[in-house]
Length: 415
Image (cartoon, rainbow, N blue to C red):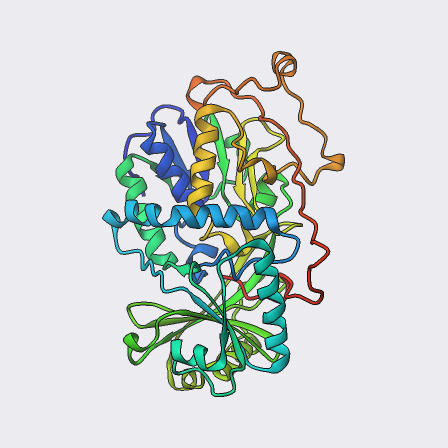
């Protein structure tokens, strides 16, 4: 598909990857007057197509990931305006009823109580809920639910509607689309290349991105009006989420598997349905309309790779793992700002894609830049591009009052 302006000249920016991140960056850059080409053999596919779309900076918070939490909270603040801006291109399914985290057993409740105390140390908005209060919010919950907590600021969006809107927005802004698979970045003609290729980022640029498989189910609610908030649950230690759409769809997910295939398995479907039915028994009566699996782009510390790479022409916007949809607005804004100014924004600095290299050595820069470390890089459109400021990510250490045995990323359901 070709869209927007003709591709006779070398573009200012080539974006590799047509998921939410790539489409968003291409759109924003074209809005700012840059000539943009996006490469993807099938835009809107991959992890963005499978994702449930939970915007959950609170209930996705984990011990030792405080820098990522701050980025998620900042992105959540941008979501209302981002959704409003895109609403002219279609209904995004953006909902703000909040998220209810519930416990099926006493052990599950103790885990949630640990999380609640942890959230309190961070000042996050969360309200403890007794079992009765949980069922008042979602009357269909199992009578065995022991309690939980409510996160009013954890929202949702429909990623399939979101990517459709972004595709239309990018096309109207003048982005050119090349429906082809990029195998070598050196073959891509552009002043700058933005790598938003998910797990393909490892193959193309040697970045430490690996696939984490997630299986997701889609069901049909008999009555969309009776189910509002997102429900996340622990059911005998098994993590599951249930995300209701306004059109009557219910998304259930997601497995967390260190595998790189996208086959839907009987075991994966069984485990998700078993946990979902334990929490909300009526699910057993719903029509199962779709099963799917995708590969989240994970990194060694579960945080994204954002900013200039060792190759001064390549800028990373990848590795978002379980937070890709949540982090879309801030990733789009930060990467576009960097492309325009050549200066690494402060919020981007902790997620330097070079932070895992040996001893996090600073990148080689031109002599003039070495003499003046704070000197901005040349913006994209000038034809010159230098590597940005290096800043290895500093992981926040858990505080002395951190509860032990909390829910770890490997145990938690992903969006």
